[in-house]
Image 1 (cartoon, rainbow, N blue to C red):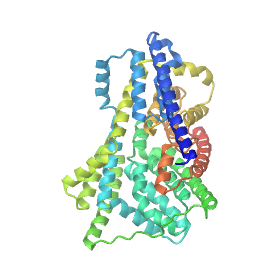
Image 2 (spheres, rainbow, N blue to C red):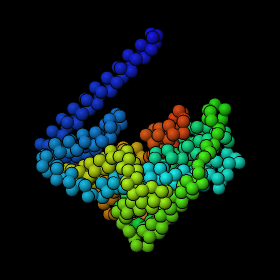
Image 3 (cartoon, rainbow, N blue to C red):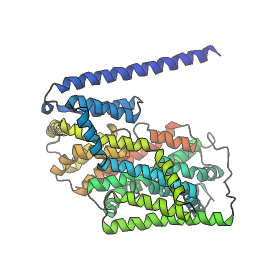
Image 4 (cartoon, helix red, strand yellow):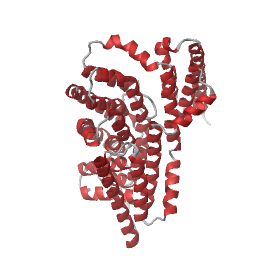
Amino acid sequence: MSDSTLSGGRTSFRDLTGKKIATGLMLLVFLLIAFWCQEQPNSELGLLSFTPLVALALLSLMGVDIVLSVIAAIIFAMIMTSTGLSAMGAMLAKSTGSFIATVGLIIMLGAGVGEVATRTGAAIELVRFVVNRIGLSSQARVKFGIIASSVLICGSLGTMAGGNAIIVAVIIPVAAAVGLTPPTVAALMMTAGSVGLFTGPFTPSTVTILQLGGLSYPEYLLYAGLPMSAVTLVTGWFMAGRIQKMTQGKHCYHSAQVPQVQEQPAKFRRRKLSALAFAATIIVMAIVGVIIKAGFSFAIIVMLLVALITGLAGGLRPSEILQALYKGCGRLVWMFILYWLYNPILELMDSLHAYQGLLDATRPLLEGISPAWLCFSIFAFNIVGHVPGAAVAQMTFTHKIFGPMLMAAGVPPQGLTAVLLASSQVDWFGPFPSSDMFGQMGLAQSSQLKYMLYSGWAIVLANIVLFAVLFHLLT
């Protein structure tokens, strides 16, 4: 082993130890602040009442597991509010039926549906249908096929990582055949997958924003979802072209062979039938949901029906459908636990009068400001000070903290919905690297973060302009 390798190993060890020490010191500081706040009247804490949320954000940025970060934030909030274990237990039990925990359940069920769609071949058949219909004769056609496939699958399954993981087996060989580079494919998948998540009728983001904003699904698309989708896709398309030019000849895929399916005709027909059943069930249930004005919990019924009908059409027995659901849901149990734990934080923050304290602190700064600029200020705050871990949680916190201020300023539901969408989705693309970026890079076999950031920054800037205009039009 060379001296440089040994030196690198020592450096890594020192960095790791230093990170642990810094995290430990941070925890100690927050613990001391929590005990100090415990002795003070909650109404007089001011911005210190946000200590649990600040701890959550900083611990996540330090690389601490998001669930562990939430647990630490709950402990700090319990100390500050003198909440005992019995009361905390009752709060956790109540949280099981809360709105945000239900969204966590929907996310988990979406992963289960994804596993059913994968086992029956429904998802991959849908991708092949899109790609074959669009054609493979040029880079532009393949790029459009990647976008259409990603929007369709991610919007249907409610997960970008899971949805794009299904389509890469088809799109990467196709992209390689026409010379698209890995950074280009990664940027396209990030752009399209995100659009799928905030436009799909039963995705966690859409379910949450409809519940909090008070609009119907068509109204949401008209006033916020489609405008953001258009700007994001157009900007992402342009940047994909720029990235392709910058990386052409420098980065490439090694395999250009499009996979062929060698199956018996009967099995192939089953795959096609399951794909048709998958798409038709989602479309029909979306229409039914709009007609009956179903609430957010309707998504649970949709997920279960999609899994059942797709599985039966694909030739799976009921027990096999359940096994697929178990496996898919099991991969995202941590997400359900995360959302289940978020609700107690909201309740404890209420006990600390945190939101009222923030309103009191910011009201002098915002007096006389127009409703449009108030919306934009909240949006700008969220781009930098985002809640790590989940867009749904960020929507919930934004609504809890700033909702009363927006309503007092006379902002209509359309404007509130636009604020919630902008505040929770635009920061996926920047200004900082995110786990979503790394995930899509891994799927696309790209190691070039800078190109993801170039694309992301352009999308962020374009959406800043869009929402600056939308806020003036909607308020």
